[in-house]
Length: 108
Image 1: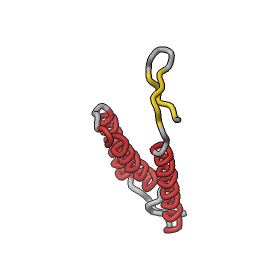
Image 2: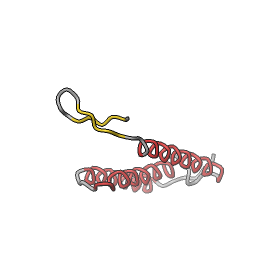
Image 3: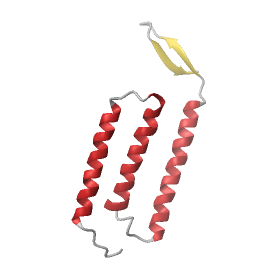
Image 4: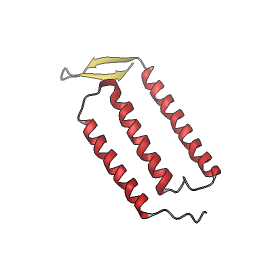
């Protein structure tokens, strides 16, 4: 454990940045970006989580081994997201009406 001291000003700046990007996330949610909605939301969330990991979890001032394990966690998260999205994308979806006449999307 390192004895690196971080000034309170840095914490306040990171907190203000997180609040700003939270407001940006809320504002972007009201716009229809089409296919870009998910990547924009995911990009903002990744940026905010990176700030939290680097500064509030003190990974920026830790050893290289800690950074390696954090990077490995992000790599496994990316693998899980890619396989989940590929699974959903490759399913054969069909529309089937129910009793009320409303179409439901169900896997075939």
